[in-house]
Image (tube, rainbow, N blue to C red; front, side, top):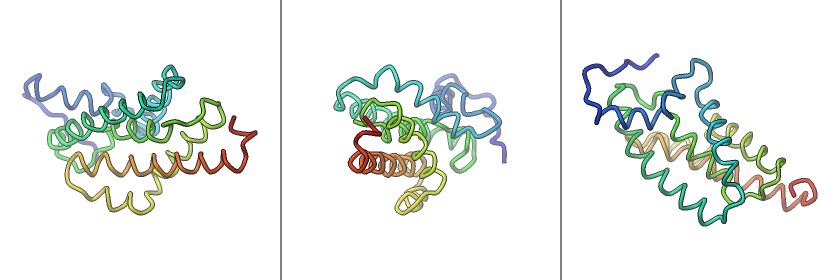
Length: 164
């Protein structure tokens, strides 16, 4: 179901929609979640060498902004967890990449595993998704990001030469 476009809204009410949809990148007609995750991955690359505490701070700000804007956008679009909202994919992908060695195999593995867990939604992501508003939209992707991050770390522990 295609979310309706809010008409006659003030600029102030449209700003959360603009942010939540990744400046309308989430309106891409095919696989907007993957497109949003890919955009998040590409946005992360210039920052990959920063200290993990900077990444964690960025994720915290993104989570706060995302929870608010995703909840507002969901109400404006009048659809539960619309696919056009991709700020959750950005936050989840950045959690997957949090403090991962900046080696191409590790980074790509984190991206692919995040997409896998985001689609699969293993426990407790499936339950988190049922929370109301922006909380449910954001938390299931953060759980998927945590699972992906953990898997990349385990792979790195088992195969240290492969992941840098």
